[in-house]
Length: 116
Image (cartoon, rainbow, N blue to C red; front, side):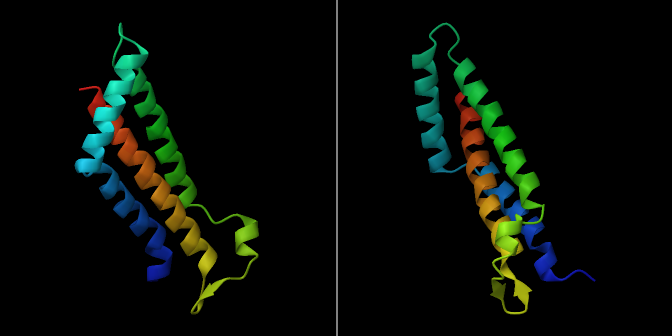
């Protein structure tokens, strides 16, 4: 049987994906600003910059998600932090990278919205 601690990276990633896919006022505001900046950069192809940004942010989000499912770097694991009976490094590693997934994903969502 899997413990809750071993499921935390997956739970973190599901929550991060949910945050990234949720449309709220910050995504709308960011989308408006990306659209404006994209049109300033290229008047002939106003959506090109936003599209390029969306692809880059999407790949960054996927990269962070894949790292969140990996064990933490040796330097973190060697610090011997503990939360109760569990080592803290894997929990903190996946939590921090899930925040990165949510951040990059929400900005990618805004960049995709800026192209429409």
